[in-house]
Image (cartoon, rainbow, N blue to C red; front, side):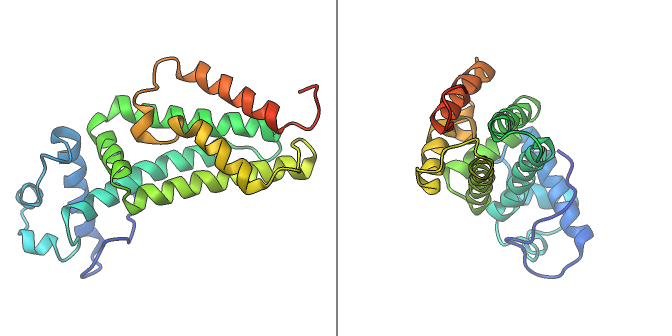
Length: 209
């Protein structure tokens, strides 16, 4: 994974971006090769040539470094979804794009950089802020699609929008939650299509959809 921009969450100390870049690049390499659990702040300090104390001026803990890497991974997924969604498309099509893109981007990370994906899995299980923010973003994207479908007359409007969002998120959670997705890779595309078709039928106001 290429480190580009750095989230400010969990950072402290001086604002020399080049130093934070070095720390995150070293962490990216070590986590990719050895895994998050087997990498220590001492390992990162040795790789960069800094002291542990100096690293702690920028990140208060190993988790804060992991959070920054996790944020990058999940941000990549969200960016791909936003790029794939087209405003002119019907809401039903957008639902398919939403979940197919999330699953495809996440599984790509799973296969290409498994040890980085492990950080995302760990962060999900531990409910790190980066994972909670990611879930909130997915829910907001879903809510916007449903509202668009209601406004256009494509979806029914009698059911509470919040109720619809909660129910659909529960139905599709296995393909959004990285912790669950790892067990759903086989037959993933067909399963998503089946579930989205079922969801769309429940949302559609007319019987001919």
